[in-house]
Every structure is written in structure tokens, then in C-alpha cells.
Image (cartoon, rainbow, N blue to C red; front, side, top):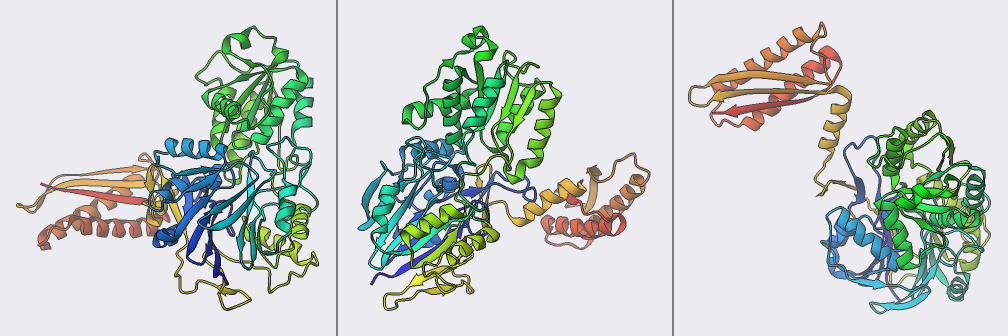
Length: 562
């Protein structure tokens, strides 16, 4: 029998950073390779990916990457992993385009080997059989798959919801799923993001009706801000424009690229008039929609510039007769930014319409969607994935209460790094809880083009800079004469305002400690190790400042030897 091992390097008990490893005998298949956005506790970080040391250690066994959806949080780690672990990438044409664009944007271009999938598909990859089926999700041609083993299928659900009336590229392929269900399912890995919600996700994820109503009711132009990682809503916008006879002006290059992407990949409905800049100025306001698209925080930055009339293009600006429709729900880490931008829109006098989590659902499976998949596949074992622990637990409870034979011993709630292992000579799986830390897990922080070079000490420094400021000290010394030649020069930013009554005394104390420490070092030292001296001075001053001011600034001495 096959030896099977399934583990997550990322994606369990967190939002994003999905990285799942499926091992069949000596072959490894990597599913997803995403990132998560940083929180306010990790300033200056672009995004965070999973520690992929396990893949590097086993790179000769990695046979393929499988990327089920065209979103950055599903493939954002791939450009970094691929530099060290090369293998063919199985994805759709749309995902190929987004992955290449993402790699170029972050200066991480690779000579990728792509294997483009036309859904539905049955493929042999490294002598293992895969069946791919399309799902209904925020991006077109998102898919799930079944990997055949001699114990039964391992099925990865992908992002999905039960949706029967969607356009062709946003439809759950129940026919292929039914064929997969004809064979035993050994293990079902199902997403958990919305598992806490009762009922079905559909139609709570749809905007079309409200879009049509907004376009009908608006007497002037309608600005629509929409995420470029949710082409389902972009498709709804184009259909609503067609229904109401409105024409679309694409606000900037990002919006134009998104439209051209759909035109080139046939990913969504594009049958509406696109206006040039000259045409938008000659068209009646009541017939115009201005589409603004981008990702995450960037879209709110664009809206903020418009609201404050600080945008580069002064021809397109908001009038009091306009309606501004925010069809983009902010992620948790930018809610404060989004709230501020909405306030700015109200201040500029236009009519404001915006969606919230109460009016618009994320396109992920609710409990009844999960029940449908469970009842169809009837898996022998079940692994909730994708989501915080509370969502994983809710998903497990849904499966437990289904009455299809799943129990506490066949539903697995794991942490990153823990494994489900089916040994060749055993019928039931073993669990490896990674107490020996053989599978390294954790966060790799991406800062600019730096990969993993931002360590906790740097993050701590950045947080202290934001909270308690910085003290920078400098002087020059003579090695031969063993004396101070120039300085000290001491600058404080964000710590004490120099005109504060306490600042002068504090400055004198800092100066005294700095000079005495350097003079004592000049008298005694033989190796002139400046780094060691600077670290000692930094520690002494930080302790003094914390004791006297109850603040912990970053202290950076700089001693130049002449």
C-alpha cells in the first residue's frame, strides 16, 4: 500500500499563508503557496510567507506545485520558494498571468515551467492520477482536485460555495465531483473560513441586485471601487452596466489591465461599452460608471486621493452630483484606513454607498455548503484547513454532526507542522505532532526584495521606534591619541521634544554616560571592538531611560575611529 503523509506548513489557525504538502511514497506535491498580510505589530513588512525549509530539504522529491486559484494569498510565496525548489506549476491560464505579473512586480521573476489546466481535467502527474474540477469562488476557474491513491482519493476542496446560477467561469462542477465521489474518499481537506455561518453562502455573496439598484437610482456618474482579486464582483458590475445602459470608464492602468485580462482570458462578462477619456467627458453623467480597482490597502489610497482632490488626473474628480460605491470590504488589518476613507468621501459631498460584512459575504463555504460536499464524498477521514482555530473547530463540528461515520478519531484538528501519516503496513493513520521540530514552521517576512532578513529584533526595533522614538548618538575618537576628537552629537526623535523642560536635563545625563563610557573604553581597550562598545552603551542608556522615563526608545550610538 502507498505511504501517505499530509501536512500544512502554513494555513492552519491563521488567515492566509496556505502551504500544504501531500506526499505519496517518495513524491511530494505542493498545494498552494500563499502569503498573509502583516498586522500592525509587524511594521514595514510587505507580506509574510510560511517557512519552506521542509521543501528545500526535500527538493529532489517535489514533483509539482498545484495552484488552485488566481489570488495572491494563494500563490504569493511561490516566486520565493521556486528559486530554491523548482518543479512544474499546474494552474489555469488566469493564474499563470497573475503569478507572472506578481513576480515581476516584486522583482522575483523565474523561469517557471507552467502546465496550464483546462477545467475539468484528468491528468497524470509524476505517475499519479489527478482529477480537477471547477468551483464557484471570487476568481474564475478556481478549482479543487482529487489525488488518487491505492487507499482512496485525497480531495482538496478549494475555495467553494454551492452556486447553480453563476456564469460559466464561476460554477461548481457537480458533474465531475459526482464522478470523483464514485470512488472512495480517504481524506477530505475542506476550507473553514466561513464554517461558523449557518445555511448557504449563496446568495449572500452577490452584489448584482444592489449594483443595478445603485446605478438606476444615481442621477449622475457612479464611481465604483472594486477589488481586483474578486472578478466575480467585476463580472457583476459589467452585467449591471449592461442592464442599466451605462458605459464604463477604466480609471487607471490597473483597471485597464484588469479589463484586458478578462478580454484576453475570457474570464468574465465584458459586453458593455468602454469609454476613452475623451468620450467620458462627452457622455452624459447619468450614463457613466468609473471603475477603480486595485488590491487591499492600495484601492483605499486611490479613493482617498480622489476624495481630497489630490489625484494625479485632475480631469476625473468627484462632484457633489456623483455617487461613490465602495464594493470592496476591507480586510481586518486595514479597517481603520477604510473607515477614514469613507469619512473623507462623505466630506467631499457626494452620495456614498458602501458594503460591509453584514451586507456582503466572503465567497467561502458556509456550514450547509460543507455538508453538501461531505454528504457527496463521504470521506473516511476529514481535515479542516484554511482559517483560525475557531473556524477549524466549527468545520470539524459540522462534519461530526453529519452522521456519516466521522468521529473524534477520524476528524483531525492540526497545527502547522503536524502530520497525518498512513504507513504502508498500517490501516489507520498515525499523527506526528512535531514535538521534535523536525518540520520547521514559522513566518518568513518579505520586506522589499528581502526574504527572511527581517528578524524579530528588527520588528521590535520598528515597534519601539513607533511607540518610544529613537536616540542617535555620534562622536569621533583617535585610536593613536586615545581621546575624543569630535562630538558628541545627540539627536532625539519621537522621544522627548527638545523644548520640553525635562529634555535639557535628560540630554545632559545621556551625554555624560556616553562620554564616560567612551573615555573608559579608550583607556582600557586593546582590540578596539567598536561594535561591542556601541552595544554596551545602547544597553546602559536604554536601562537608564526606561528607569527614569518609563520609555524604551531605540538607542543607536555611532563611534567613528580616526
